[in-house]
Image 1 (cartoon, one colour):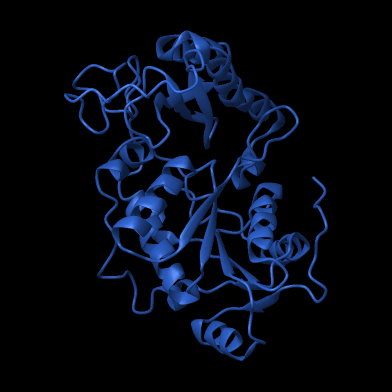
Image 2 (image 1 turned 180 degrees about the vertical axis):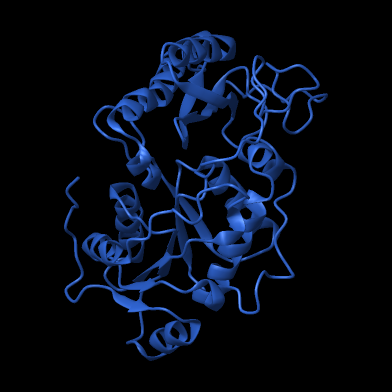
Length: 343
């Protein structure tokens, strides 16, 4: 894909250590706008470029945009694709610069975690144990630990994340609230190919046949969105039917939640999420869904059902968590089980 050009005049400055970062931020001309952070694991594509462009809009010409490129080992489990995750720093600098970044921080593992694995980490709470957290135990502890560390290193006013990793975005917002981290978190909609496939650094793992099969994820989401006026059951039925028409998709989960990953409402704003393996590659995707007919102006929202647990959907039996669609229970598997860290 071509990269849109909104490059800074001199391109982004590359720094690799916290000392270099602090020195640059302390000695650069005083910014009159916000400092905006875009955390990534590199292998940047147009989806990441959208994040940087949004950061540039938020920072304005008077502010600064910092992009971090760091493949975080804490969020990869045993048998996942840490070693083969693409590292393309030279290309990343071009993408980040064209999209408007002022500075790229690309630290080593030893720089981020001096002395080895950190002794103090961030626990994600109950939401970190469902969906991606159920399939990838410990993943979100690694994500929130590195995000918290990057926020501490950069000290931004705003941090920008993609909505494709919607559970990650939701957990980062929760961590910022619960830990009083003092940063505004902004989400950016998912960038897609013309045929609907969500952009991902791991799409490069797909051969042509697998890429065609991978379109089943976005097809399922679109079918669910179209069924939204008929209610939650119709959304899930339509999405499952569409996904089943694609041979070679091994589904981990296909679930409907509210806009904050809690129980799906009877009507109103919801989120449809899917995770599946296509060949040796694991992909995730999601879309917002509006359930039921649009409420009349001035109609109050329906109250939550008091006997539902925080992550139990009205469309699940009491012993199912949202990482379990009624006809499927995700189980951890070896191989390429990483996607939520693809920021």
